[in-house]
Length: 309
Ligand SMILES: [Mg+2]
Image (cartoon, rainbow, N blue to C red; front, side, top):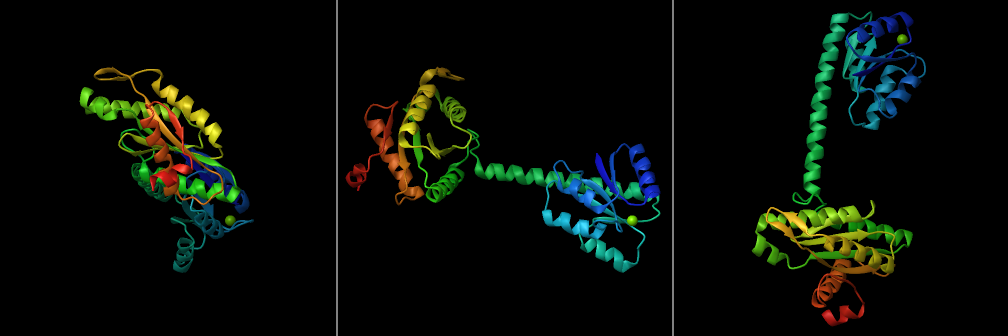
């Protein structure tokens, strides 16, 4: 465990370093508040810090305030080192964001006990953060395929559309539907159907750029948001994705299953559009891809809006 000691009195700093090193900590010692700030606000900052109250540069209480303002994660557990120990001083330090304090000259046993409490808090914090991240992941991802879910991919679409409008760039939106998926389920069973969806999902993920968004839109339907891309480039890329999906059968508990997908794509180039209108356009094109024999990509043409309404 890395620990920062910020203490301008040399003897006290040396004693702290000796004791902490002896306890197995990886100790970094600085002698002023600005150096401490640089370390604590930088990358890979120690999660434990012992800060002297009175220091040149920035005092311990100021440091506490500034660090708390950063709202960093992971959390920094701060013990203030002080010759002041009237109740009011302690309250001031704690209000500034210190977790604990230690009176100088320090008592090694007391320090050990306070650090033990700190480690306990840090490990609880880690668990809370990990739990929250897991919940966030669950709320935005599809359990089966690991892709983003309907809500999250729609959110990406909304953001990318706003960005394309702002930056006056074009973007493409595609709906992808696994062909004859009901037949796969009926013939091979639902486990095999799940294997097909999972594999198609991972083939899509392997073929999109890192800044494209792919999500499971529902059932056997997927949505891809392709920012900064005109319709011709999108068509090329979706055709190569379609070929990649169809290239080899998906292995499933029931044996290899041939799989193809139909794709409908539309583009945005500055006209009035909403996420819903783009999805609807991609859906109209997808319908045509199905009608024209599946395993193909079709581009939405504006004339179709009139036909379909
Ligand atoms: Mg001092």
